[in-house]
Length: 422
Image 1 (cartoon, one colour):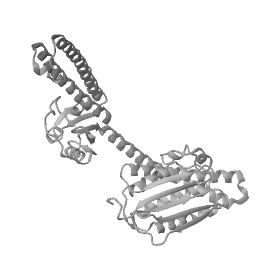
Image 2 (cartoon, rainbow, N blue to C red):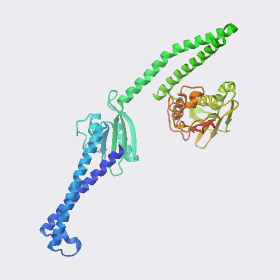
Image 3 (cartoon, rainbow, N blue to C red):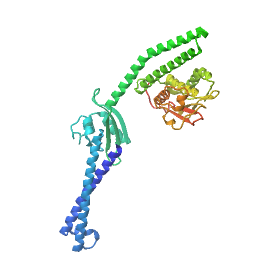
Image 4 (cartoon, helix red, strand yellow):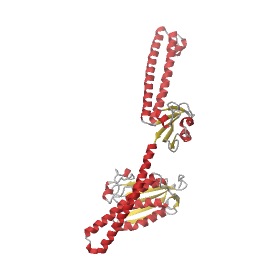
C-alpha cells in the first residue's frame, strides 16, 4: 500500500507539471501568432516568418502531447483511487500541517464521515480521535508510526493505523478495520479455554483408571498376560500425551490472547538452568543420556518470570533428551555476552533438516523425524518462543541433520531490557 500511495503522489505531481507545461506552451503559441518578440527572444537573433510558423507547429505538437499525457495521468489517478476503495483499506493523506488533503471512501466509512466531509479539516477534526492524530504526529517526527485504536469505545470499530511520512511531502495514513478479526480471536480463545477445561475431567478419570489397572496387573503377577500389561502401559502413555496436549493448548491460547501475564523479578538464569537440569536428570538417566550444565561465574541478574523461564528450559532439555541417542550427552550452557545473557541447550541427536528448521517454532509443526522418534504435541517450542519474546528476548535454533541441534535463548540484562510491566 505504501508503494501505491507513493505512486499516486508522483503521478499527481507529474499531472501538475503537465498542466503547467500546457499553459506555458499555450502562451508561447499565442505570442508567436501575435509576433511578440518576447516569445522568440531566447535565440538572441531575429526570426523570420517561416521560422515562426515552425515554432508554432512545434508548440502545438508539444501541447497535444501534454494534453494526452494529462488525460492518461488523470485516468491513472482515477484507477488508483478505485483500487484503493476496492481493497477496503482506508487511505488518508495529510499535509505537513496535518490537514486532510486526500481521503478515500473506505476512510470516510471507517471514521463515520459523509463522503468528502474530511477534506480540508485538521487531523483532529477529521479523524475524531487524539490517538490517531498522535500517530500521525509521531510519523511526521520519526518517519513512521503505528497503533491500534478502538473508536467510540467499546462498540466502535477497531482500526490498525499505520502512518508514514512521504518522501515528497505530507503524511500517509492507512486504516484497516480489524474489529471482526479481534472478535474471532476472542471466540477462539474462549472456545479453547472452555474445551480444555471440559476435557480435563474425563482425561483425569481415564488416567486414574489406567493407573489403577497398572497397579492391579502388578499385584496379579503372572495371572495377567504380558500382552495385557503392554496394552495397559500404552494406555497410560497415551493418556499422559492427551493431558499434556490439553495443558499446552490452553497455555498457548492464554499466552496469545494476553491472558497469561509475566510476573517479573530479578532472577539468576544460571540457577534456573541448573534446577531444570536436576529436575529432568532422572528422565535423562532412564534414556541413557548424560546431562551436563556449564554456568559462567558472576552472571548478571535479569528481569524475568522464574517459573516461565523454567518451563522453557524444561521443554528444550526434554526435547534434547528425547531425540538423542543412548550414551550421548546433552549440554546446557549459560554465559554473559555483554548486553545479554545467553543460554543454550545442545544435543548430538538426529538433528533437524534444513527444510524443517525455519518452521519448528510454528504451532503443531513437527518434522518427520520427530514423528518417528516419539511424537509430541508440536506446541512446546511455540510456547517457549512466546515466553522468551515476552521477556524481550529471542529463541533461535541451529542444526545440521544427523549432527544434533542447539537451541539458544538470549535475554537482555536489566540495563538493556525494555520497560515491561508484570
